[in-house]
Amino acid sequence: MAVKESPSACIAAEQEHIAKVVLMPGDPLRAKFVAEHYLENPVCFNTVRNMLGYTGTYQGKQISVMGHGMGVPSIGLYTYELYQFYGVESILRIGSAGGVGEGVHVRDVVIAMGASTNSRFADQYRFPGQLCATASWPLLKDAVDAAEKLGVRADVGQVFTADQFYNDNPEAGEMYRKFGILALEMETAGLYWTAQRLGKKALSILTISDHIFTGESLSSKERQDSFHEMMEIALETAWKSVEA
View 1 (cartoon, rainbow, N blue to C red):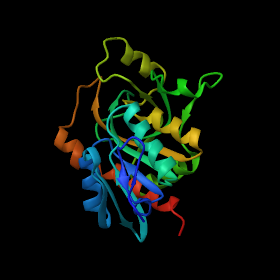
View 2 (cartoon, rainbow, N blue to C red; view 1 turned 45 degrees about the vertical axis):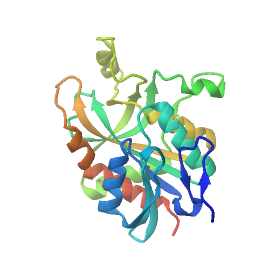
View 3 (cartoon, rainbow, N blue to C red; view 1 turned 30 degrees about the horizontal axis):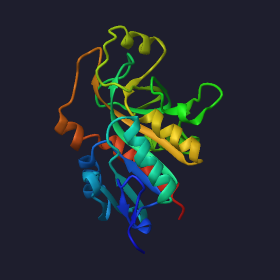
């Protein structure tokens, strides 16, 4: 099969080389780490713009992992093309987030049931109301089950997808916490809306890399190479989503 180049020229790969389920960290080097440490016989299928993508097997089933970059526009582009042009059915974001909730600590795992946001990404759909960005129930249920099986405590709830990393509003954090937001990040709403629009499946599994109230934080190296519990939950969930 010939190499297919996506309309944006951001992905160039043979469709058969991309699995039906894809794990997606923001950092392409984390995608490389996951492929090399968790997948058997990983093969790189994309190097365009250094957004590395790999496919291998996990417990006998084909799974892919690829970076998605930072922000809703970036994840919206890559996930749309994987869903629409490469036949992907399920995407699991595996990323970092800033803790907000009182019971959330650095290195904790958060499974995003839904994502509030200040992004205007969904305006394109002309939805007659406010479109709720929610996870796919089968993936959410399987992720919770996988966490329990692995003995990992995972918080399940709402995250906030922000369009900005630096927020000039000093009161925002307290308001997020008041409404039960567990963590802040920059992509989940875009992933969920894209999946909903295309009739696909999506889930965001996050590790707390820093906390906006306590000031705790991990280094860039720790963010790239750690987060094993999140990765293992995602792999087990992805494995279950693939038909035998």
